[in-house]
Image 1 (cartoon, one colour):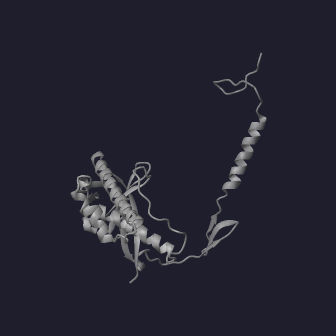
Image 2 (cartoon, rainbow, N blue to C red):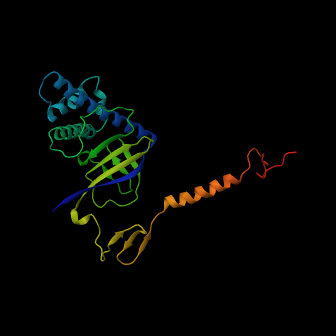
Image 3 (cartoon, one colour):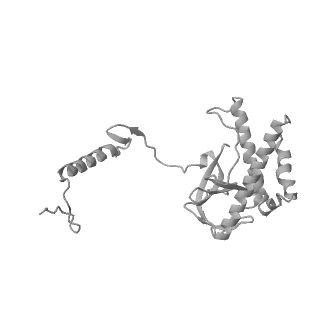
Length: 251
């Protein structure tokens, strides 16, 4: 059976304490990503073999946690760090596939270092992290806590992963990935309708329903004409009464 992955995004409202924990997780994920990218760049510049995924994870996560400079990596979920490296590996695979011609479309640039000043910060949790949507509607994340979620619809199945995103405006979102069968993506319907797009009408349905075309330009032109007419009737350099906004005759 053909499987389809769908993404559902909802607004979340972390408490001030949870925002601090999320900022720590964003920072740790960013550091692991940059450390992994730096290790591969240094290996290439030194003429050494490409650092494989397993060796890279050992260097920038497992062994790094034992050092004083990176001991704080243990303060966040290990899955968050592993997913940061997974993002780096995906970026490299897409770049190599683009260079060799295996990936169609526009050319993909090599991975770049992430910055704390980036407009978008994100971390991802998979099932291994044991995140959970609680019965009370909150999203439970390891080492972060239960986040309040504004649900606009119900998830069709249990999510396989969730990404927490902070945008440039400081808003937080939870982006769930769910897997469905291809025949489950849309509910069955009893009727069918054809659509004909045209100029006089935006669309004409096969059942005779006509959808009017949104004539934004014509409405704007009519409004502009009225404003220009009002402007042409106004007298120049005539003072106005502040209370009534009517012209005042000069004496």
